[in-house]
Picture 1 (cartoon, rainbow, N blue to C red):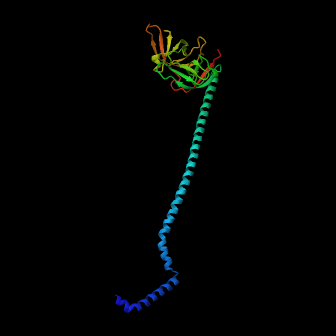
Picture 2: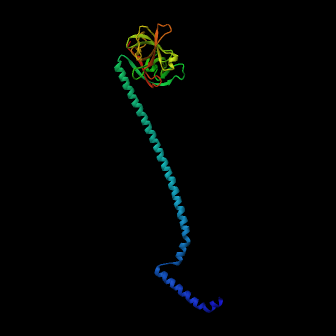
Picture 3: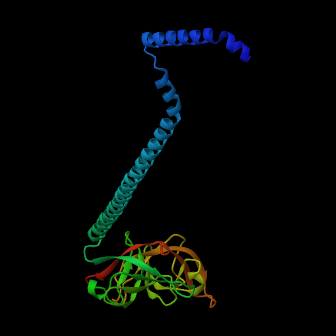
Length: 276
């Protein structure tokens, strides 16, 4: 091999010079710079890595900034939803108030001699020994003991037994302690309406001391009699469900189904004056 280079070295040198000249002329004609190209090959990976780092940094910044923006928008939306919910509740309350006022107007037109105060039920009895309600009207609202409490249709709910400045206790017509004069509307028969513990559990009350001559039938409407002047007359209590004969074989009594929804009523009206 060394002999080959000794014998042909001059020719190889001439060939190398000619090749370099050809490459130089070609590069000049084509605008190609071998050194620059080599540098580009060497630096391309570094430029790619730098670009990737820059892009990742920009993405992280945009993400953090966008997250704060989205969080602010989300909070604004939550506040708007809460505001709409409050408006909806206020609208519902206003609608219910309008309905109560219409009911009150209807009651006033039907019984103009009576004066009412509207109230809401805020508590119910929590045991099986009594049937009472607490309403959010008291002496400051003109409510007194023995005032009758009715529903929106004028059906008797019960009677006020205790009052405080801002609330009152009402025993319902089912409570065993209740007793007031009753009247059968169809026959004008007078009797006594009273609560009964056993019947209370069935959602019924008792019409007692019905004379043997009374011609009661199932479905007869029972109202307050007004006898004694404590309670107003003509308030609808309920209807006769079943008629029984007492143990003495003479007197009779009837089970009465209330006209009012005692268990579900939420808003009531207190009769504070009945023009006696």
